[in-house]
Image (cartoon, rainbow, N blue to C red; front, side, top):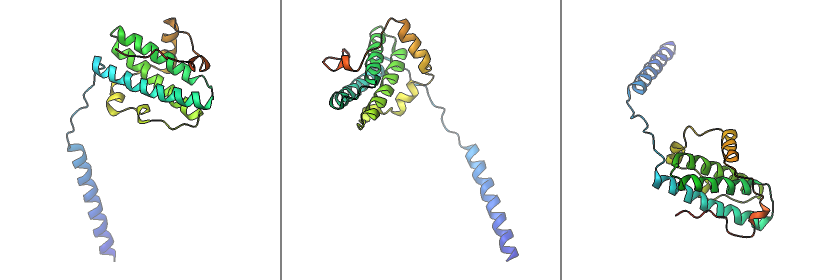
Length: 163
């Protein structure tokens, strides 16, 4: 029995050592940064716009106004403005924040989010280095954008069409 335990320990240590060596020897390609160019940014904003429509419908149906829909539309309108000014990197930051507000609005209204509310691996890479929520709020306020109420958005067009 003593020999069996020693043999087991020796095999375990050898296997662990081999696995560790193999792990450190494997060369994986470095992750390449994905740039927020015009087509990627347009797709990002279009996905957020679909999610905004879904969120708008949910808030319209339940009438639970938390202010998150207003913030979502405010941030997405600003993202659209940045996109039109060809400031693609900033546009995806504000569009991502808009989706985050949309998720909060849906949760408050007990609605199920669509897949448009989720971020793909590429979208996560594009938004790496995103400024803090406080910094984004400062930037959008400094731009002259004023907060919107959920109630004010119930009547119609959200003004988010991308060309």
